[in-house]
Length: 332
Image (cartoon, rainbow, N blue to C red):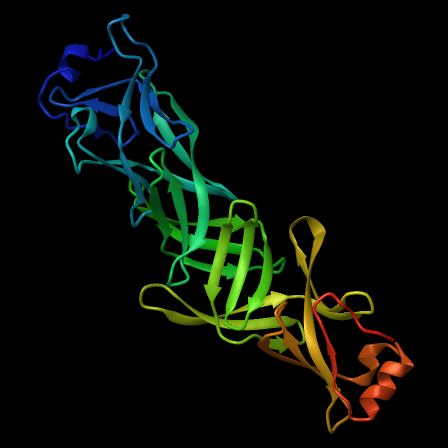
């Protein structure tokens, strides 16, 4: 067993930390592997915990202080600062996989080996909030103790699945086997439409965790709403579909119902102006809660009303335009 020399770490010489391919810390200068594993505390600080310190004079753990990021292969990286006699700018790269995205957390699966060569896995999690950057990419803001934030940007692509969940996909190169593996993360939240050219995916409303995307006007289709947006620093245009069904509700008004995770239904209510066009179709121009135009126009046949409200039909027949506020419903 290799033993960590405490006096070495008390030396004025800057410590040049290194990690082997199995995510184990190496004693700088002596090229000795320390048996232990990494931990992240509630303040998102990294430490390396020794599994079997030799004596009370040997530190139980080593604290590594720096800023978090992701590399191009989606490995977790800590860039050390000058505290604790560290060599500033040195990068500690933890080889692993991004396996889970929670509303206020991102988790990585780390593989390692103990002193006997036995392989084992453990999970490291960082806490914070999710946001979309100016290029509609997904990013995680790691909350630090000093009220600063580190950004982990997911540089791959994302889609919307049939349950209206965001699914992020990336390709990871396995350096040991020299193969590429496709990985994916599913974000469990719900959509909201509050602006003409913005689309919001809410993960945690209380903490403000979620994505606010810049998009084109919503285009109603038979299956729901389609939007176009650009993703990435050199944006490529792509189209996403929010799947759902339109309904008229006497108490609520116009509602867009979308299936989401767990067989639940997420409903978005709209205000609208309503009239019959020249072809006797029901034409609605959608409004937000402030009665601003959302740029979304819907057309339905008279049958869509399902014979609801003769007074409402008669008003439309007279060529009058009916205005209803969000959540106020129709009066018939």
